[in-house]
Amino acid sequence: DGGITQSPKYLFRKEGQNVTLSCEQNLNHDAMYWYRQDPGQGLRLIYYSQIVNDFQKGDIAEGYSVSREKKESFPLTVTSAQKNPTAFYLCASFGETSVNTGELFFGEGSRLTVL
Amino acid sequence: EDQVTQSPEALRLQEGESSSLNCSYTVSGLRGLFWYRQDPGKGPEFLFTLYSAGEEKEKERLKATLTKKESFLHITAPKPEDSATYLCAVCGTSGTYKYIFGTGTRLKVLA
Image 1 (cartoon, rainbow over the protein chains, first blue to last red):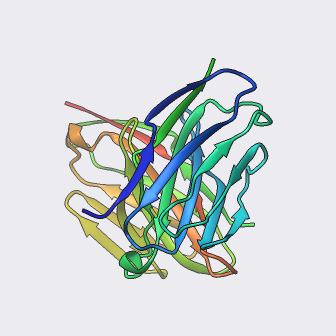
Image 2 (spheres, each protein chain N blue to C red):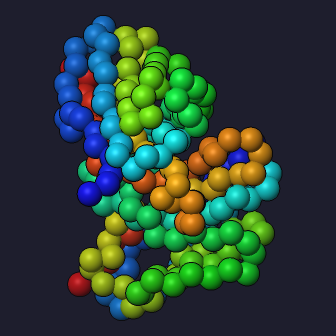
């Protein structure tokens, strides 16, 4: 079945450490996105990529970095420069299988907790 | 700047008590307005896309409508299993496919 896989589902990090969240999709989608969700809040855009080897900053990119070396993969690194990284992180994609509805397909999320 | 505002933040209904959720938006050209359902600890699940004012979409007890400034998600005779957070998002026509989300409405349906 086609979909988006995020890993790990839960992650604990000590202050000052960088961590990388994985996002892999087998939908053959060109566009991929990272969102952050805080308790009781909506989704805020961190980074997005419309095509391989290209990506743009979203509304809250500070303290985060991404790469898009392969169409299937869009990993997110939460750096030590991110002041308040504890949150629920969601990866999404858009492409030819969703052209009719325009919808974003979402993964199941990764919950990062900084100790 | 594209913006989405949802109200109310939270809503408690008795089973069978119909109501509506609001999504107000500003966007420089609307590519689409989207409704999602999100259960706790899960990724959002797609419900509807609306493209132009006057359009309506229905799915079971849910009906989404769109005007030039806002969208409503009407819930008719809700059941406890409809309890979730409902998210609204817009994608504008300027530049890239950038989806902007509102803060959501947390719906609780009591049996």
